[in-house]
Length: 230
Image 1: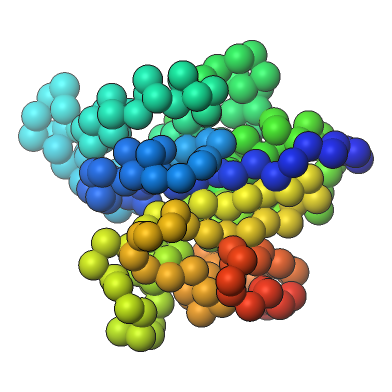
Image 2: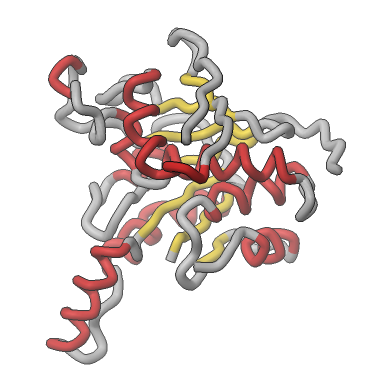
């Protein structure tokens, strides 16, 4: 089992699907401190859309927004020693190996939704494949932030109770050495990180696969209680 004492790693999301807010990558890099930037440009519906585009226009059929977003932030991320991983269905260990070899940017094939968070976390903390509890915690954090703004109110039934939902901020997860995590968003952004918004995102993502989860909304919110899903 890993005995790492490394500080938490803050992993941000900037895209939940192809067509998500184009400025999100730039907002996450410039709006506050992060250690890694992740995104999903090949979600299930997106794959259908891209295949139809490719059928009509040979040579097309790729997520053009990904290219645009990376052009906006790659230089900044590299200069700041940040890591960009892209959920482009593999697990996290290929991402870990790429980071171990010094990659600044990792573009995968189809990766599991949570792998783009579990990968940087496992690399940062030096986890091994049998660090089950820590990996499980990172997977939970990955499922919370995988769909971008859904974790900050976009998937919340009571969204009308949130003061500003015009441009909800994108989420980040600070993953600690034991796999526990704190979920937050950059200051002065819209939306909300609360027990309600995180539960609304987490439960349909994990369903029966989540046994015990303990993500914590960022400070100023009430502590996140242990919850059991079945």
